[in-house]
Image 1 (cartoon, rainbow, N blue to C red):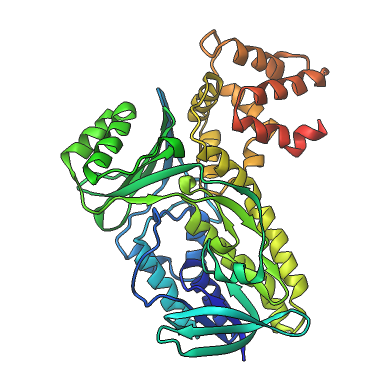
Image 2: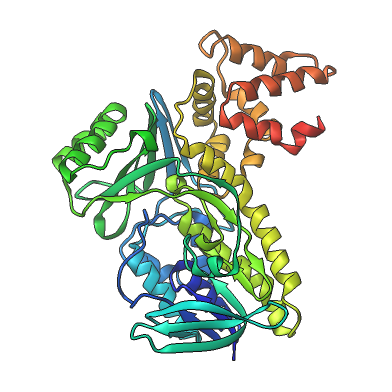
Length: 457
């Protein structure tokens, strides 16, 4: 009899098993794969909230030792507007890393086994065992040679990806579900100089991206709306990606032409959904319970945060031999509160809509304001909640960084007067300003109007 059975032994599963085993619980960790072997199709980036967890768990030095440099700044360029800003700190952690995915998997898996979790590889779960009340009490599985396995536990955790077997077996429903919005291809380049920065570009409904990763390599990629994406031979993909950079950063495109791609092109396309992540005797974590478009490169970070969130919720109940139901319900509430804002932000970002004139003026102002610039890239890195960044007070303060004169355009000048020039005893002027800002800020405006501060006003 185990305390917990975790199905899936990659990022979220190994992290969950490690934390529970370190707390003294008997944990069984199952996976269909044989390790080391295979690798997740990921762009490897781990934002500061994920790095904070690795540091807490004593694993950051191992990650850094794999040959990936720290990344301190993120940037966005659209047309002539360029923003590059330092990442805000999360409990003293203000850097990201992009380790090789296979090595990160191995570090977490080895930590779980070292903590005492029992790993069984090449085991596929076929059924979930339930008691008379319908509570999950274990698994029925089989090995690669069809040897049957039956094991029992107080809790079964599905950490087996977006196509989770556990989720299917318990009938966990999706909600706030949206289709694939874009497709991307990326690969690794050698001999590109890197300076500890993530660079992203938005131009003509294309999202190009690049950052330093492991072993002196650089990730280079391009995301396109689904209707514009075409499968092609490697040489044609090379030309497509270089051409996208040529339009926004000719100097970097020239470097690409003078260097070499050293791996195959990888392709990614992910739907956006949340799943009901708990029920009697079971829980979902990582991509099994929540998947958002990879355009913000947050999958690994979300998996690390989710594992910690689940363990924090269930550990007191396991320790006290109490009913797990309230703890699991609390986990679900905390998860949704943590991820819902960034889920919406990522979904909007994934549409790869071109910025209008007013949006570009706001981004240009963010580039002039270290506070706002850091907040903008912190939002991309899942540090700053979108509702906080797009609060009326924060957006109003941004007008201090829009220069006087006619350059910003008449819409921005009028709203600036309503925010900064109208008499303060006329609150309707501020409310009108917020509505006008929202109407001209695309997806940014949605957060402004949804802000609790805006609703109270």
